Length: 261
Image (cartoon, rainbow, N blue to C red; front, side):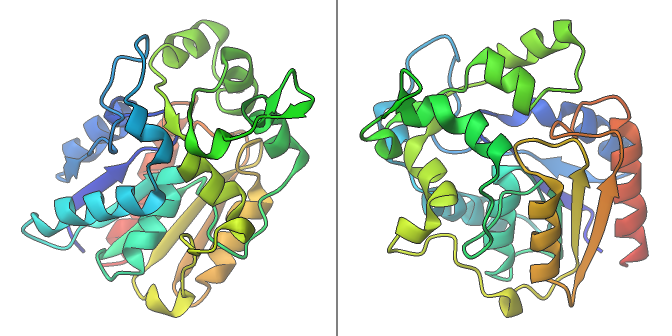
């Protein structure tokens, strides 16, 4: 198994939130590379690059493929949330020795619409929580602290919720729409042929996850059933990279990688 790991962050993130995992994995001899997605290298307190709103998931994937092809070996591809979907897309291109998907966003034909998911994104898609926000699919957005604390950081201590949230950056409306409204995406951006993913796949889900419910993660694992391992974690939610017990999560990942050699 490769000793190089490409770590792909999710919505509103940059490379900073992999720090816990990077420190642990590097102590185990892994080389960790955590690229920042296009236009995400920004000060969260400043206005985002206008081009971000219309940036596609395919733009992210193409950028990541270029980074992977610079490496000396085919890497393990690890992705969290939206990064988990990007990892699947890269895996379908034959670019990874293994995929590690943490609470992954789902590809086309997996319905991720749940009440908790709609509640998370409702403010982004509407005006005054009633009227549709026209054009949200091509504009930048940033989740509110209230929604981030409820949907993403719900098991984090309150003081840490604020600290983490202050690092959240803006996200692409187009990328978000391609995930949430895949049926209306005529380019079929998130369509993945399961047969094209031939490397081992680990899918990890938290039972208290509100933005990627366990039923969605389980459906992702079933999509790649011939090569996948599914791990459901009690007492965990979406922020698997930093919640209490994150060490146990990454230890499980290392054990799984070693067993796949």
